[in-house]
Image 1 (cartoon, rainbow, N blue to C red):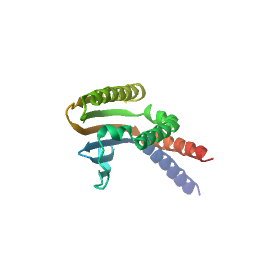
Image 2: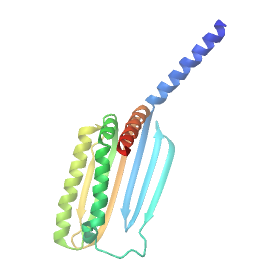
Image 3: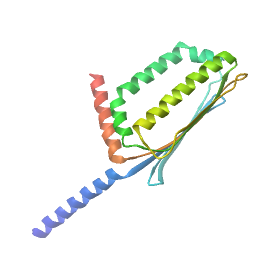
Image 4: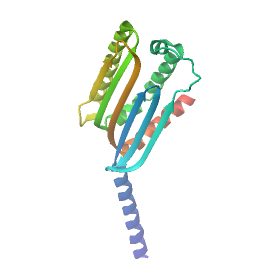
Length: 196
């Protein structure tokens, strides 16, 4: 009887140790996003201590039957603005959960380059300033909220005589599994409150 009790106690201890180790495991997430010639590609990989456990590549191609519009017209389009407003609203609602994650997140790589032109020098110059401001705000936010293991690198290359848009984003972060679970639980609570 005592032997069985001791065996059960040992199993419980080992199980608790396993759960503790699992929660402390560091997850590495690498994201690469590319927009080139109206084609988008998103690549995500997840690793545990550099051993890749998941990788996924998604390709998005522009449909041929979509009416051609200039880059500047697309940005001014009300549908585009509505989508951006909706995105910002969702991010704001998740802000608390996001901060919980970011405080424990280590940034290992962040490189974001953009080449663009609207075909008009004046609007290209205007958008160039907007992009620099947006990227500067984002990198400042990251520097304030995450643990930096690298210096974020951003660039904007305006093409005043061309109508083009190319961008590439490379980002690698790491966070412990326990922190991810905690953040997901917060997100779930926020979604439940929003649904009431």
